[in-house]
Length: 432
Image (cartoon, rainbow, N blue to C red):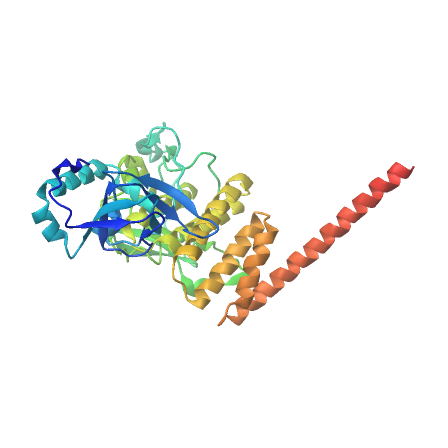
């Protein structure tokens, strides 16, 4: 930004080296660096502290939180002695009148960022979860196309609504948001199951168009068993297949219980959605398919930081569910990769958001289970212990944490016995 147009220093603030300029959370100030260097930190002065970006003379920061009124997970710190111009919502009108030249430079700089605003929002949320493929960002459709997929030879998919004509989903759609390593997976799905599924009518809160989508009937969910990590398994249906709702018109996607409640329905659509072709839209107009299940999760990950003010927990939940889906498909590589991303997301929530004791306890249990899945026993024990000792805590979660700590202890005893036996066997062979 050209600072030569600055007329005075009426809005200037001085910070000494290592001073905190702005902490994470809701802020109403935009900062322009006149002199010195500012660092943007994630988890500042915590074990997971990370320097995200540096700003020098002519740079500005805090614009997303200032203009979009969203929470920021970052803390800005003076790396040297710093002078900034700080503009609050209360003083912005006076600033534009007093410093028209600098205000124009600021608007020009913001316009230059506009084309990248969606990607920037994801970065500012501290969670660049989507490792997009290096290929072109547009969806590619191979033959046969959607038109031929709906031809006489295409297999029809039954609708869950009696008497409604069957619709054939598009085939051979390559989805640009799938990360490297993702492959097509079959899922056991019966979209004609009228016992567990119903077709619900929606009006998309973003594009205002109507559509129908399958969702699970809560009254028909019957728990068959509960895994050690507290995941419920249900008779006849897997709710994970229907936990994300996608508008087939604009591709706005979110966890089903959040779909109709975005905080920012008029936000600029994510850049990643603009290159997706008509076949991708058709994918979600047809009854749910395995590909649409996975695609819906990745669309929801793109949409979350754009359309929701407090999306961090939803992002972590999406990644947790997605990791479980890969696990159901026995795709160990993608399961572990996604589990690591889910763990990182939950740690961001744990370290940066204000949580009630019950929320903290639940989060500790989830985090511990994710550490355990990744074979990090030390950290798993630490978070199970936190869940056990959180007050006031939920007795059920306290019991679960105690049980899992006992499981780990038994596992460690068995491993110690095995190691000792192996050592004795080795020692015996050497004596012979």
